[in-house]
Length: 314
Image 1 (tube, rainbow, N blue to C red):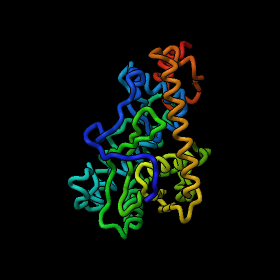
Image 2: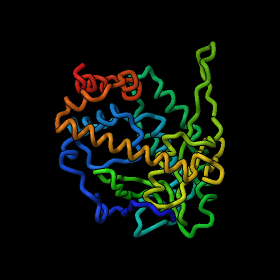
Image 3: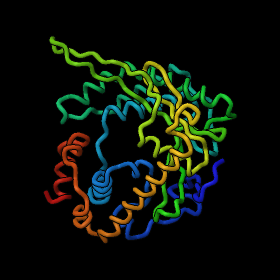
Image 4: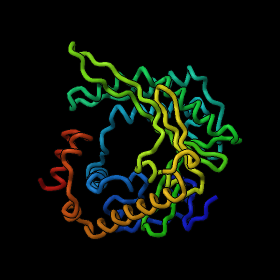
């Protein structure tokens, strides 16, 4: 296990044992904890998210692509006996692949496609449906291959990291861990082919990725620093899977992870410093950050853009 000057606690309800409290000044702006995703988010996205939750009790809308990945992991967890995992009961007997597939598709069908993007999200929702069973099966196969020497697999559960340079605790969720290692599931869904002359379209299934994005490396660095467990990534498509490890991927080397983790800490600290500089004023906070309205519109739609313009007084 790696030696780090940070520590991790298992979840005890909403708080880990000994977990530091976020300062009241930051709580007043909605920051009770941070995360790996918080480290990689742009500051306009981060602060808009905090403001929406704190002042409007709402979150960013879901999209078909991430919902498909959530559904695949849901099915894999059911088949592996890891759904609703907690450390007390541990890994249970899993469902059959057929039963897990039925549950996965039922969850997938809970999603209602967006109605503001000219049908793009609805088109993706329909196209992804066909490949989900193969992606679930490939995810299960990849997890089993990776943990073939482990006595048991731990599923996704809340953990906490105390980083001394951060004034707030860091919350994390690992997808799968065991035997001193961990692996995170990353799904790549089908991609559009160009429209045909008759107005129809086909889709292509990508090959599994072999290299992580830098944002994914940052995420893994946080998990690694928190737990000391060797990180890996399970890249899954309908065509198969690939497992990236420090042995076959330089981006997951200790040197790379240390560099990525320092970037995460710097991002957390900048977020906290900007919130403190705002001193409880959302108007002051939004005056410190330039919004990318084009990206906000692309990702979240017109209703969020309307609220974002209100936040930035545009």
